[in-house]
Image 1 (cartoon, rainbow, N blue to C red):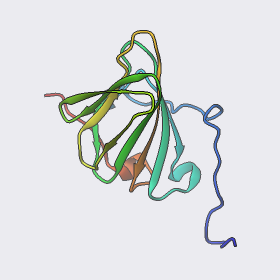
Image 2: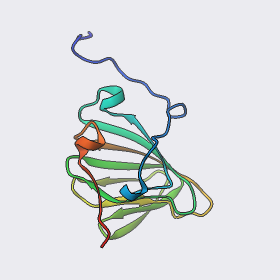
Image 3: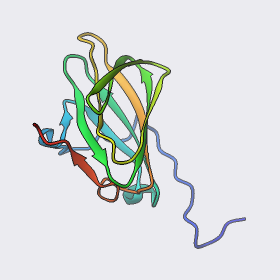
Image 4: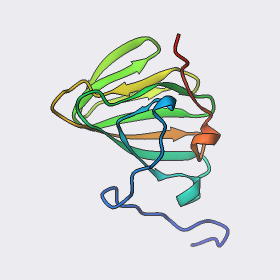
Length: 140
């Protein structure tokens, strides 16, 4: 039964969905292609953002950052890299998943010079980057 006050389901094809433009390297987005697949702006999500990121080989990364209002998971679809957790770096490969509670400094880096890495990730507790409370870690 469909309730008219509930939005319809939303379906997206990751292969046809455009990458986000204008992500600022000064905000930790280094040489990566990010798709915000499900969020408030396109799907009406209020408590979830789901994305896909492709990290090309040779130095791409999502620098240390945190979300004051959202937990995050990252699932490595293909390739490998390191998950940054605080000051630690944890090697990960395809088939592994990492979880970061809200407020924890974290990030991801492709460590390969030859292979790209693809991850699917989600923020729980917010429907947009702004609502998640995204903050890049200041350099020491």
